[in-house]
Image 1 (cartoon, chains in turn cyan, orange):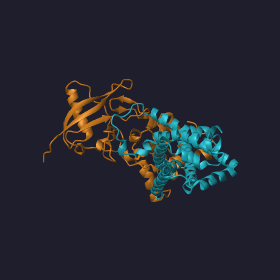
Image 2 (image 1 turned 120 degrees about the vertical axis):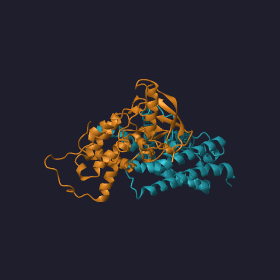
Image 3 (image 1 turned 30 degrees about the vertical axis):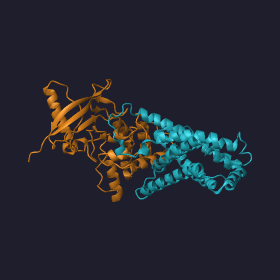
Image 4 (image 1 turned 180 degrees about the vertical axis):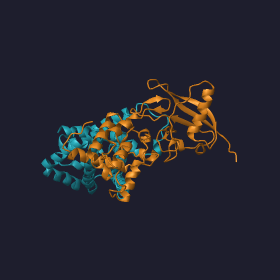
Length: 225
Length: 257
């Protein structure tokens, strides 16, 4: 296995790890968004969805472990690459014209990712932890998952952070989606322009989709009857 | 017709040697719009020398955009603000009277400054030495076109081979990555039948040397392609990624450098 670690430690190897874990996270987000849409259909729909996941808990736990590995590797390699790449240019340019030769998202991936990371920690501490392990209000134990979400979405700073993070996520995905294909070596002039467009569409759907929930519950939700 | 000379303010990076700390020095110049950027520096150096001052060190050779020796970062753009030309092909008519121009060397850990605007790009030679060759039989010269190669493939290989190794990709990249250069060299052989013998060893060796020299990695910003004087495509980077991964997974030997 020595060769494998040497390979994944090379510059191209680390980028491949980023792409493999990134594509897994891209797929995860689709599933996550589809599931969360049940929030719009009221408490029964959402609680039913979460309870349905409970039935297949062992399987979910396995998926969660893979997800954890993907997040850890993506964040770790992302950080290491950022450090190495900073070291590759010890003296910076006085005049920087990078805005004229590359996209903003491609140059800010590390910082966009950092915003998402901060959000991720908070997100796990609030929703994931309470749904799965400990809920001081006892709402989760009564299968009132819906109320946990609604309660958090009444806190203005939580909603604000959520929206900022989700916008950062959208920009991160806008670059990340097409970047996966380039790193895998799938850059073909027939398909790549389409891949870039699909990536932009995907990023918008994810950002708008995930932002719609806190916005809806903070501004428009009148409480369940 | 006589054209009016341009008055420009130059802020040029002066650095005594690789150990010392550099800084920008201001120069006011008047230059013909027909002069090339390097000719302007020549004139400036003439006047510096006439005053007994140390001339500004910069590199140039063919001055027709094919050797890849020249290379300055002008207002943040390697080879200046125009696309698909080398610094030597940049003419002063592209600048406005009264403009301020910041002139910097290529900046990368793997390209240490030797003096002023001159950098040591021997790292590129080391990458080439690692795999930029093909094995051929000695003896009589083979017939031309002995091995049939489709035109589109030959053109693609030629497009990759058009890389002049100037280092603008490294200079433009926010990570000072040499991926575009290395991938162009990998691709020009990988696309052709003559390059197949060493194909998978070559990609591993060249990337290993590239990593060792302290170049950064690829964030797929594509700034390299945008600033490349020869318009080398980032599809070459994709090809290199592909070849590298398949080489690592399929090969039975460890390729060491």
